[in-house]
Length: 125
Length: 234
Image (cartoon, rainbow over all chains, first blue to last red; front, top):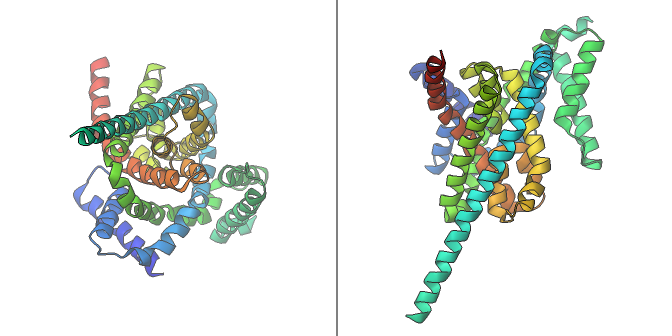
């Protein structure tokens, strides 16, 4: 229960800050940033929240069900625009997947080669 | 149908059907509890002529828990930070460019194919985890319910075709696959790569959390740019 209270506290804090400052970020993201900061500064110890957090993350998809059911109201809209939305969505997904994967891999490879070169230099020296 | 008006109806029906599909998933791995539960409930509401508003009296109790669940994303970020620090530069760079690419390409494609700006903002945050993508959509004039559906479908598709596609294109490094999946396919993709290796799951979970933050931060300048662009076009 203490875990749930801690998460609720940061959610509330995020909401308050968003209301007071009008920061253009979702309130939950502000709460998340505060929570991460608190974890790193050891204001909150991991073992107090770990159990609740893993429960919530494990069954997170359950909490989406009412949201997806709510999309019933958008069926006429989807019927008219599905081709455009699906097309853009699929292309954007494939592009992002490949760009991200390629970027990380080429960066890691470049670093590995650099490290190998440094090692051979040390050996020669 | 008076029982449907009580919040208990929405909560009980959702939890029972969801638990059923979770159990089915443990026997048949292709079962998707989220999509199938939603479909069953939608069909039930339509067939029994129960208004969605009545269902939502209980349903909103469940969707409220998305808030604490979003905060809980901090735990995988914190737990994996130490391991990730060793190669933080490529990982952070990949997540940043990946999040930007997802937002920008979706927005430009929708506009280029003649879509409206509310349609663009409905699709753009799709690579962030659902509670965040919904909020970003709401903040900039998209339809949050539709964004939720599109986000889930994106995650589903990325989790199915992502790993084989990446390997086919020569991207075989576990860290690279983890970042690419976490950045594009959030929780559903993370659950998928976690089955292959713990490290990929950790990188993917970290990427998912950070992508959520990046998408909500990057959305603001993009929104302002889009605004300028519309003035230009007019």
